[in-house]
Length: 417
Image (cartoon, rainbow, N blue to C red; front, top):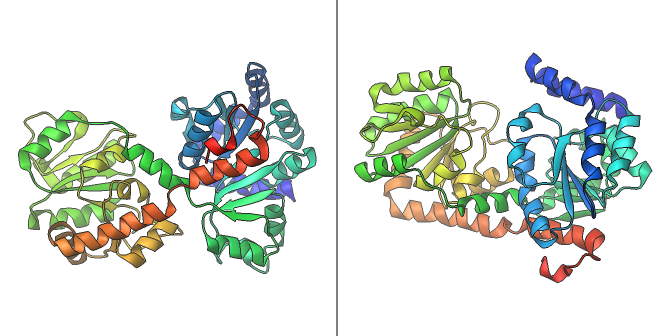
């Protein structure tokens, strides 16, 4: 069961990669167990292991790791990952070691985990690997599903989801985001479940409090003294609608396309002419209406300059991260496809997220959320209610893990919660 399901899952990932990422992944698997063995030899003290699929999942578990390292600096935090896209970012991670998840065969996985001997293993969100979970269980290592979120449409809860239900039963405990996920797991006979929330909320708040500034952007804002709308992770549909309404409002725009490529930058600039500039090419005398962010990793900080955010993806598969902009207290707008995100559904129901499908709808919501105080206050209240309701997941997760595995450390559990 494990090998077949693992291969199916792997094939699904690779199908979306193209040859470049698949080749890098295959090359990195050569010697991966040996690299882990060498790395852990130099680490004294207890070890804990988290597995993430890619960068997004690491961002989700990052506040948990930060809190663990702060409270228990002698505990070694290790991270395994699957996607080659991690390679550009892992040097920034505050962990003791990070490398690929060994995948080649069960013998390698067994050798790898027994070299680490972690106190526990945490799989973040959706990245379930059947053979790995089976081996961890056989070897006696506690393994947790952390920040998972489920819905009725998931195959685990269908009549044909027998193998999936068996997979979920391998976990020692499920730490889920919401009560609905807990209820669904209990319906299939899994009772070792606790609702902890989503640590991405804590991560977003942590980022919003980080000291960061950009002099060029700030000078441009001071020069115009108009409301700023930040459009993040955009695709062509959002960008075209923004361009259509841009002349109808006293607003300035910061646009961050999802794909950072020369072709995409040129597509956006063609909508604005001389009124838009790439941030990397911007000078102090730029007096246009829009800045295009062409630098990776700064969008989450740039949101602080906005009064309102437009989030991309709602006209494709699903919207992108809305937690980053709402952590600054901003209402958000998006296209209609919200996906499974708990925060998107919650805010859409409570007024913090407004949906548009046409230029007229976009213009309508922009006018209300930028210039009508009653509507602004209502939307911001919904945003703050969500943040205040769902913050603190990181501490709940750490409390759970500490009480079971790190009670004997030098710092008391009470200081962690």
